Amino acid sequence: MMLRLLATSLITLLLLVGTLGCSKKDSAGPAMNTGSYKLDGQPVTCQVRAHDESYYRAGVYSEYVDVTLTTTPEPASGAQLLQLSFYRSSPTAAYQLSSVYLFDKGSPVLTCAFNSTAATASIASDGSLAGTFAAQEDGHTTPPPYTAITAGVFTNVHF
Image 1 (cartoon, rainbow, N blue to C red):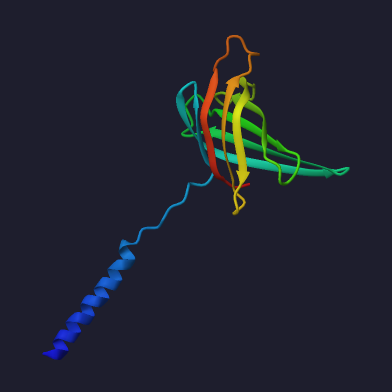
Image 2: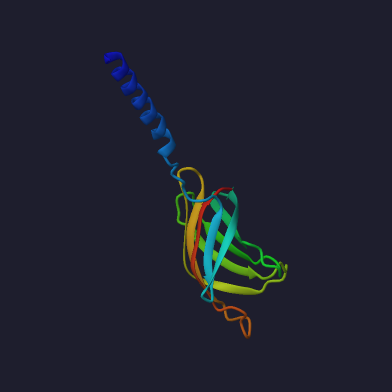
């Protein structure tokens, strides 16, 4: 009788331990190379690529980071690309957003240029890039096809 009770308790314990592993959920971090923004209030989701170049010439440090956000899913009319160019003058300085260009429907011709109204970009401890941005049309296109980019964000972007 005691052996049967011990065996039942042992089986119950093993089943409980086995189900603990099944109930554990992986904590998913942010998806890699993703971003979004609103273009004249319309939400846009994107895949993001980044490329950086740094130079040290004649005692002057310069670093440039280009971030390209490509519309996903791609519209039938072609992909929309938003190009953000960041610059910093030292490895510890904050990034400055120097240009914002929109290329519409897969065209290599510039659709609209924007002036940055707010932007951040930073490198995480794992080497990935994250940032936020907003911009207004620069006034050089009449009439402008778009007027504002708001709520822009990109996360976990690996070079």
